[in-house]
Structure formats: C-alpha cells, structure tokens
Length: 186
Image (cartoon, rainbow, N blue to C red; front, top):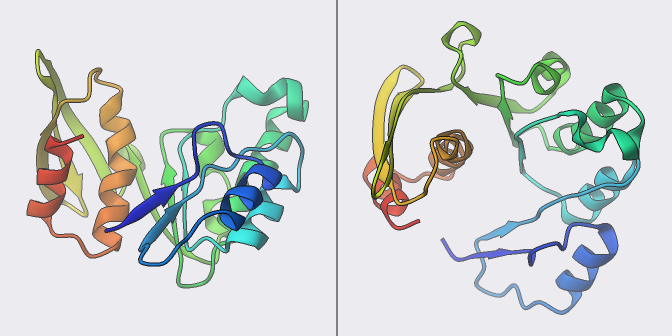
C-alpha cells in the first residue's frame, strides 16, 4: 500500500487540517492519522473531518487525568473515534485494557480485539514472545489460526504494538506471507 501519515506530534484538529490542506493525496491508499485531544469533542471533530473507516484503541489509562479529570471522561473522549466509525468500518481494540473493552458491546461497527489474556478471547491472541539480539520473535492465534513472525523491533512490549497492525493488515486483504515479510523489515 502507498501510505501517508500525519507528521510526528501532529494530532490536533488544526494540525491535521493544515496537513491535509497542504498534502497531495493522489495515489495514496491509506491515510494514518494520530488523534489527540485536550477535551471531550476534539476527537469527534477530527473524525468528522477525516472520516476514518478503521480505528485503533491501544489503551485508556490515567495518563490523561490532568486533561480530562477522571478515567470516565478519558474513556468518553477516546471512544469518540470508535463511535465515529461507519457500520462497515473496523474497530481494533486492546481487550486486555478494561477501560478499552468496557463499551465494546455498544459499538455499531465491526470489532476485532488483541491481547495476551486468553480468557478474554481476543481475535488476535499474543502467546509467545521471545527477545533476541536481532529484535523479537512472537506467535499467537488470529481467529484460532497460528501465526508467528520475527521483527527487528526491540522490546517484548512491541508484540502488543504489532497485534493491531496484523489485524488491520488482514482486514485490508494482505496475506500471511506478505504480513510476515513486512514485519521483518520494520
């Protein structure tokens, strides 16, 4: 795919709008947008502008308590992305995070999940992660089908970062061999 993404630290409605206005999207297949917010309603505003068809929610933690006041308000702000997805869209969510999974039943779009807790039945289960001198090797199950890959990314935590990418790649029609090969070049 030909992919373009918002530049590093460009994640507000003004920054994203400015990037869109000065960017030529001819020939681009995928536009990746990081969305940030300082208050409730800002992610929805970005979604109204960008019209995402895929949304990834990796975590909801106390990191933004100073901005939102409490975890419930943080959830409300971050869920604006998932609630903005079209019926034929895809929500990709970290099922291990209780604040991420709490409102999944309310979504009207397709939902896939990732995580390490087998009891939560994630769509993409991360099972075995090994740190090597060349990066990480990991495996797991996607819809009960075994997958394994190696990547030069350093740190076992990156297996959890790869999982939503695997789910999106499958959704976009990439086959297993293509996904494994791309992971080797990260």
